[in-house]
Image 1: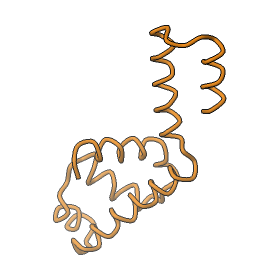
Image 2 (image 1 turned 45 degrees about the vertical axis):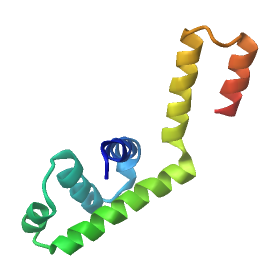
Image 3 (image 1 turned 30 degrees about the vertical axis):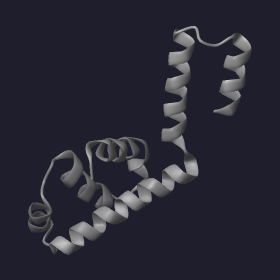
Image 4 (image 1 turned 90 degrees about the vertical axis):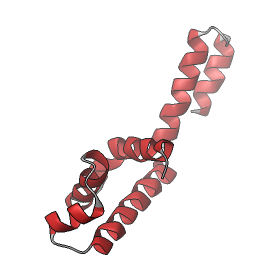
Length: 103
């Protein structure tokens, strides 16, 4: 997983993290926010490394599913692009209205 993917996953967690179970949040936070290794997490939680790996894959799947259904992250990204274009005076009022209706 490259840096861009990690940033995306962290952004999805910021948006949808409260929809995860406490257990899912714990695994995610240890690995992605506190930078623990799979071995360290497995030791802390008294589970196998494979269980940690499986949980993390499940968490990412849940976050991606939430985004696929709700599209909050994509809409925020589209709005940021639109705001930038507005600030650069690239759009007329009509075009701004049309773009906002799309989002």
